Image (cartoon, rainbow, N blue to C red; front, side, top):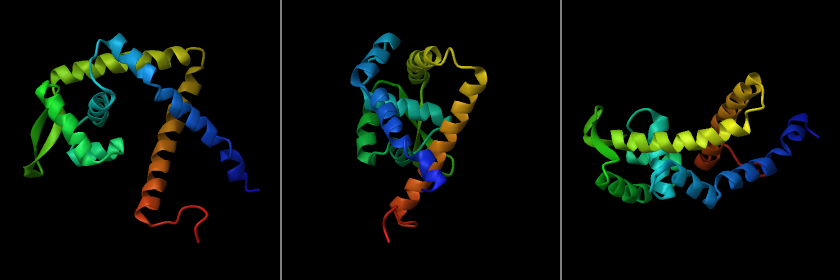
Amino acid sequence: MDPLSDATTGLLPHLLQLRTLLNRGQLYEQAVQDAGVTLDRPAMTILVVLDAAEHPLRVGEIATRMHVVGPHVTRHLNSLEKRALIKRVPDPEDQRARLIALTPPGQRIVDRYTTVVNGWFTAALAQWPHQDRTELLRLLTRLTRDLTTQFDAIAAGTIPAQGED
């Protein structure tokens, strides 16, 4: 067997377990309760995506990062805008287009939410040496980037999925 395949064979079950753990409904409910936030998961995800981007995004880019379609995002953006948690700003590259940006109240909500969730990660990794925590972040960042590139290429048809001829 290929040594690379040997090293990755056990990866999928762990990734699925991690996904399930992070997507537990009650976990999200606990996080928003602890943060004092009253937003549904898709709305909170939009705010987190905007915060992580560190700059305003187009609706399509938000949808891409969430792996959903644009109309799904637009519906939530309208609600978030009514609550003054996001605002539409001119796109400096195309004055006809609008970008989505966090407002100060939206940023405060994201900060409260991420403080709660980051606290959970901090507690879970408290006994790990600093070097291991740093390496975990480096490797997860690399894995996410490389998987995104791979899956985008498969979806675009530029490389075949494994097992296809």
